[in-house]
Length: 577
Ligand SMILES: O=C([O-])CC(=O)C(=O)O
Ligand SMILES: [Mg+2]
Image 1: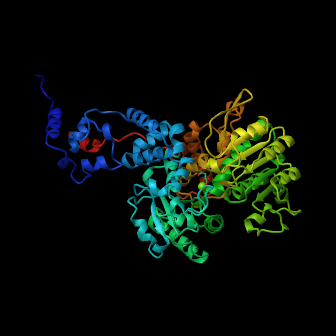
Image 2: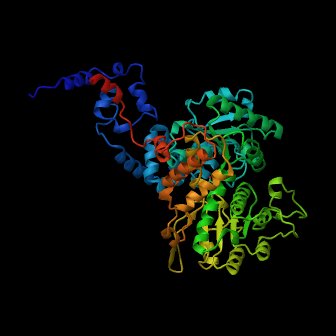
Image 3: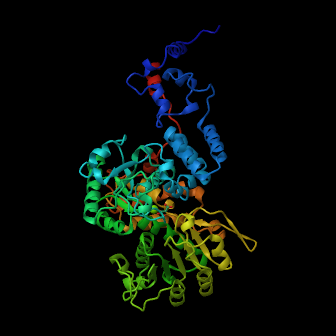
C-alpha cells in the first residue's frame, strides 16, 4: 500500500471525526445546508461534507453549479403555470441564493419574466397565495414611532440599497396595499441578477399604510392592515420617520428606490427627498431613462433629430411626467429654450388634453409645467389630428387606448411613427405589438412594457422591444452605491439613458430593435454603473474617497460573485500550514 503523506493523514483523521468540532465558533454544517447564503446543495464536495458534518445528508453525487443550473432549468420549464413558476423561483432563492442568481444570469431570457414583469403582477393579484417566506420587510403605520426597531429585525446589517413601495399604485392595477409586496422583491432581485449588487446589501420593503380599495381590503385572504390610507400629514410623518430610520440604521449612503407609490404621494416625496437623500423614483425617473434611450434609437433609424419630434403622451401620471421631464432636460441640452422644449410635449390624461383652460379637471403643479395654452381637446384622435405627433407614448394603463383609428392616424402623418405602449402588465397595455404593426402597415417603430415574442408582419420578422425600466435601475443602483452617491441629479438619468442607447448596434436597428437585446442586460447595467460612478466623481456627488483610478475594476470588484466559495478554505489552509 502506498504510504500516506502527513497532509493526507491529517485530512483522513478529520474526515472520520465528525465535522462540527472543526468548525467551532462558525456556523454549523447543518445550518449551512439550511441557510440560503451558504447552501451549495450537491455542490458541497465530499471533503466539505465530511468536515462540516453533513456527510450523508446529501446524495453521493457532487455537481458543479453549471450542472445544478441546468437541472433547475429543467424543473422550471416543466412547470405549467406562471404562478407556480414564480413560486419555484422564490423558493429557490430562499433555499440556495447563489444558484438562484446563477440560474437568472445564465437563463435570464427564460426566467426573468417569472421573477419580474409580467408575472410579478400576477403574484400581486395572488399575494396571499404565494407568500411563503419573509422575503420583504413589512413596516406598518402602526409601527409609527418604532420604525427603527422594525428595521433592526431585518437579519442583514450592511444594507446599501432599499426598494420600497406603499402599494399605492401597483403596475397598472392601482391601489393594492400590502399585496404590492412582490414588486420591491422583484426589483431588488434585478439589482443582483443584472446589476451585480450583492444580495445581502439589498432590502425590499413594503410600507403598509392601509388600502383605499375596499375590494382588496375586504378579501378574506388580504394580509395587510384592514384600514384606509391615512390623511396626508400622518402619511408624510410616517415616511419622514422611515427615511430618518434608514439613515440611522444604515447610514446616509443607503440608497432608497421608491416604487409603485400612488401618484400624488410619489411626486411630493420625490420633490421633498431628491436632494436630501440618495433616492430616486423608478416609475418617474427610471421610466424616463429607458423611454429616452428607445426614442434615441428610433431617431437613429428614422434619421431624425430630437428637436424634430412632437411627443404626445396618453397618460400624465408618474411615467408620463417622468419621461416628459427627462425629455425636456434632453431638449434643453440640444440648445432649445424652455418654451421651445415644452412646445414639443403634449400630455393627455383621463380628462383630455392637459391645457390651462380646460373645463374640468384640476391640474397638479407637475402637470401645469406642460399645460398647453389652447382650447381644450377631449379625444386622443383629435389631439393627434391637431398636434400631428411624431411620437405617441402610452403610459395610461388603459387597455385598447391605441385603437385602430389612433394607429392609422399616426401612420397617416408619419413615415415612421414612433409608438411606445408602455403600460404593464399586458392586460393594461394600450395596444399589442400585433395591432401596432397591422394598423400602421409595418411602418411603426414600436416598443412595449412587457416582454413580447418577435412578430411576423407581411413576410418580415420584427423584433419587439421591451421598453421597461429594467434597462436602467439595476446599473444606476450599482453605480450609486459603489461610489456612495449623495443624491441623484437629472444628469445621472441622462447619463444612464445615453449609455443604454450607445449600446445599440446597427444590427439591432436592422431588426427595429430600439434597445440592446435582453441578453445584454447585465453588460448594460455594468456600463451604466461605470458611467454613473465616473459622472458622480466628476460632479462631486461621490462620497467614497479616494476616487478610484480604474473605475471598471472598482465597480467589478464590488460585484456579487456568482460562483460558490469553498466552505472550508480558510480553515483548511490554516490547518495545513
Ligand atoms: O415594474 C415594471 O415592469 C415597470 C414599472 O415600474 C411599472 O410598471 O410600475
Ligand atoms: Mg413600478
